[in-house]
Image 1: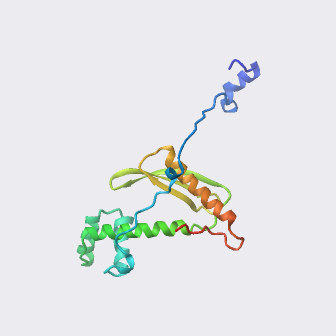
Image 2: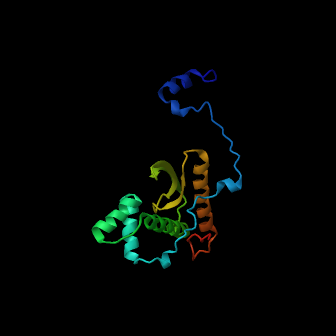
Image 3: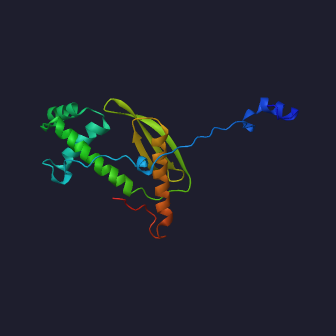
Length: 186
């Protein structure tokens, strides 16, 4: 404040946002292996070889994921309403396998990415515990261009999501003009 003249001192009382007198500087030292994108584990169940019809898989995912029922309640609903006898472990196995393939699908088919993106975070409950989703969204197409799920709300998960968004943007910029979709990294 001592370096401001009288006019500036008057202005700072009315519009303090015009004056940035102190800055926060942070330096992060992350190693490349720490910046890996989270992904579901390879499933033990192959969805192409399950012993149930695809519509039963759809019902399982509808109740378990969309309606957020527990695996036991999902199995109970299927048994009580549809006379489909499945164990809760089958529900868990199918959901884990679907998560793996959905994640792979999402990463490889994001579509075109705009020059400007915005990032945000939200919290979700996973198995009764709070987790955080850090995501980036494209300004014009409103597509989610990157996301990362973490159990903490720290800087590292946000940087991982940001790095994924940058990678997606770079893959668009380096692709031939006829092919402007991100390349699969699997």
